Length: 86
Image 1 (cartoon, helix red, strand yellow):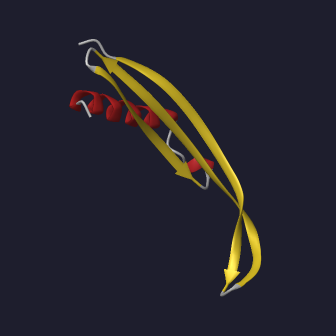
Image 2: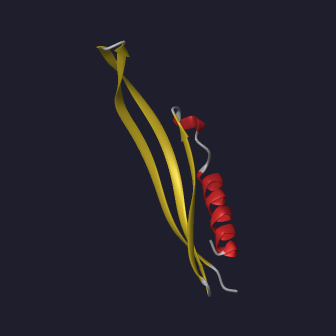
């Protein structure tokens, strides 16, 4: 059985203003950031194709999992899905 993995990687930085409410009144907002990294893989074999992903997210970019760990999670999930024919 010949399997191939096609890779799509993405990183995300989300910065947005979060509103603060007290009962029915708007009382202000604060600026926040969220960092993320994801890896989507597509595996193929003689029976077809399957896709799955791995990701990590954190407020502090130093707390993100490594790209290797995210990629390994995506590969494990994708190959498992391929084997199940999901």
